[in-house]
Image (spheres, rainbow, N blue to C red):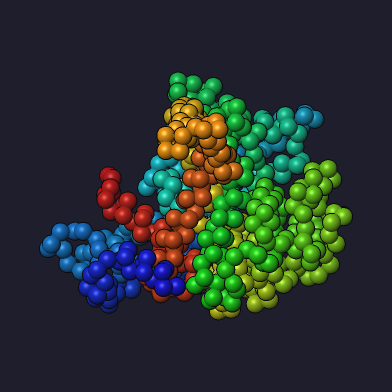
Length: 543
């Protein structure tokens, strides 16, 4: 805790007392209010998703606004009221979705039947362009959901220093009910509808995979865009990320979100001050965890946590749950699910027959499926000490309040599941640069390392002679693995690890600066708001 405090004091600078006085003076003039329409949210059983995000945003504004108003640069003659009005105005710009597109189009199915398909794309903020966010295929897709997820993307990108605005798309279908041919028709038509309205392009709006979509759908989108509206654009394939490697994708993208969840957890699990607050010891050894959702994110999260030394005791899916107090082997479960299409009946665990696996005893709970699974009705019965929000919006505001009061460390979605968008950013840069990471330096690094060993060998031989033959120089195992230079996957993993570590430190600093304790969600939102505010303030308002 002392080290963390020292780091935070260094950030605030030497004039901490004058800064505090300025903020207190501004606080007396600035009192950010939660809008009347959102005041029921903290006690609501099942609030609308977008209103949840709006509420979290306003809660963070109450923390951040006095400091923002005190630091805003309007010239020496600016009054406190003028600073307050500009600050409130910029915060007001951040809240709503700037563009929302709803469309309907026909598709002819394989049996000759015609069907109308409904799709959406929401662009929450254009403070940075392009906007960025996934496309999901689900029967739960609606305007409220895409607006909420696009808003979350705005704050998520700012939280981890990815220079995108937030966006999200959805098509209201169950992909399991359609053939590959039908899904291709739907995906390509959806891409064309987005292109006609200016909702896709390398510098405009860049989608990515989400629930119900993957590399295949992203490849169809890139191909459709590049052969139609983007046929003259050399960067056409940068219109979407999450593509297959041979279509301009990047190594490490598939596992990126799960790897990000692991590193996000690790940054807090290794921090003794936070572990002491919740009564756990630092480190992975002996810690148990439960994962809800064994899709792409849940699978890779389970893999990384198990490798680190934690024990997976339960997996929950929509069609059934399994439990094994002694641990579940993620690789064996993955193979079983590929073969059987379900985790039900897995021989390495028992079928779970309790009320809800989310309520079972464990150290870490990872909701990696859908939103609002931890709510007012069950939050007080959650036994986990750490909740890692691998899904978007799994915890309602009412549940969030209950969990904080119970001393549960909730690591929020806008930080911990940002691994996907971080590596998407790397893929987008790769597409714009038209060269793979490491290709230009791979052989040079390899040769340089061999020359280094030869130089050490020659130095030793000049000192001790060569009686009895040359002095052998054997690199250590870890150095031998790196001698060949960094591969694209190495660079991606390194960049992601650094991003998650730096962002965690920033959130910790904000939490300490505003005395937020375990309320990491408000700290993360505040951190994001401060960055977006600076962008809007510096760029000004157009037209």
